[in-house]
Image (cartoon, rainbow, N blue to C red; front, side, top):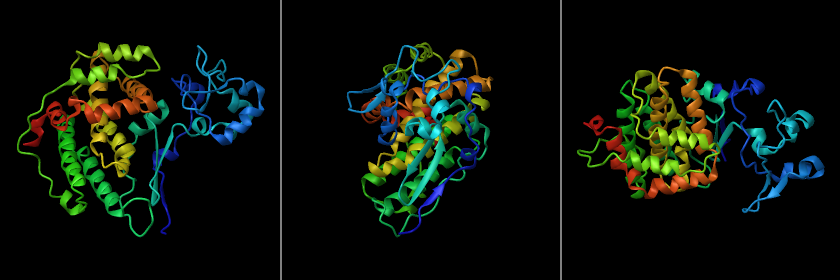
Length: 348
């Protein structure tokens, strides 16, 4: 078997928790699942063990109090880490905001937008997503057909390319959705010839509807940690999407983030449109919140909204499951409706 290639992008290596200088407390209200390695140690310390419960999924978790995690001190720092060291933390706490995607032949690392400092690094670096895997997979027992992974790698590169031009973001989004409808059809037909991806041409006509109200209905029903954010989503419903050169730059990077975070996960189900729907949903909500709050020119506030949105959606298993189901069943996320919403004029 060929040696696994590990990709650590430059911005990833520069991350360091800023502790008390951070505007957020990452674990304050999350359900923290304790891995087996940490559980033995936690059980041996009475002051920790008394806060461990078993949830409905039979996972061992830390029971939250009204103020959040019981192990946060007055400075909102972790008592377990300060007293016993980072190496004694459970895996979930120790890894955040680091994310790894292991595809056997290669493994990619990135940071989560849910962490404000990681979010700042991602948006400050012009080359954030330039170092990810861009080779053919071959000659190994990877647990999946190499030809499908190579197809997805090529399709991911093309998808990312739409957001590396100077076209308005709405046009880029329309082309991204349209191309992946094409790629999805090829996957359905079990046609994995990567050369055919280069033959993509936009459809001649689009007969979709802009159903943003339905999108807001879906996102309003998510299980939010902070009910104020749900209210913000609801209040932003009637706002127009932010549409300036500055906000377009943020949305391009946001699209690239989700492409590199989730696109290759389609190796398990061939569903490349899931990433398209994720990008579209994030853009629909965040762009209107920006307009509603009148923060189009406030970089710090835009990053705060992006980071909060990620924390509320990307790090909740229940929310991710609900969104995935809606992406595949709701008419609002039908690909022609996505293209119509983004701006079908981009295709012609």
